[in-house]
Amino acid sequence: MFELKISINGKSATLDYEAADEILYSIPEKRKYNRIIAEFARSPIPQVRMNVAGRRSISSSIVKILIEDNQIEVLRNLVSNRKARKMIPENSLLRLIKTEDYEILETVADNLHSFSMCDPDILAEKLCRSENPRVRYSLAEDQLVDKRILEILSNDEVGKIAARATYTLESIELEEDEDEDLELEED
Image (cartoon, rainbow, N blue to C red; front, side):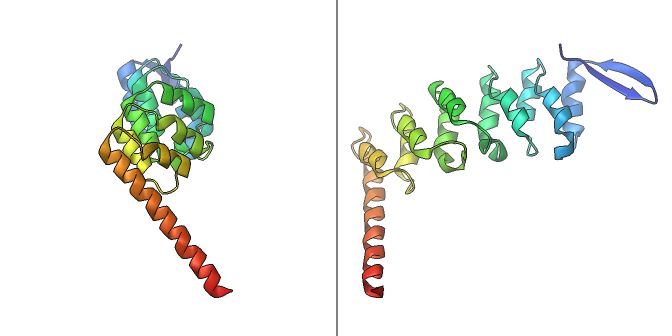
């Protein structure tokens, strides 16, 4: 049960659900308030949990609570949160990828390397099979994606994606050749 009480000079009152969201906004974005914010993460009100998921001062305990949420909007806010991305475990992110939610997929593809608890190659392998062309294109232009993924994408049914993956592969190979030439010159 989520109950919000306020106490001033020994006098307390229980606040309604609308007040919960307003109070959440009034709590400063500082780590010292994360224990209180974690309680807001347990709110039955999706809007409150969405707002918690978007906070800059989010902690790993709050991420653990919210990653299990069943509201897609909460999960979207969580993967969009730069700080939270560093705390989302790989198995949880793979579960979110399986939802095939276009916003989650696009956010993960666009920020593939910022999910520091995840192997970007494993994520890219799952994402390159997405039906969403925006997700595949994002991977096709990422020079840090494994060449194997780029080779898959170079055969994509969407010509623009295939062309971009081919261009990215050629750029990587050209860069590798230049690095080799520099090493030979130094020897």
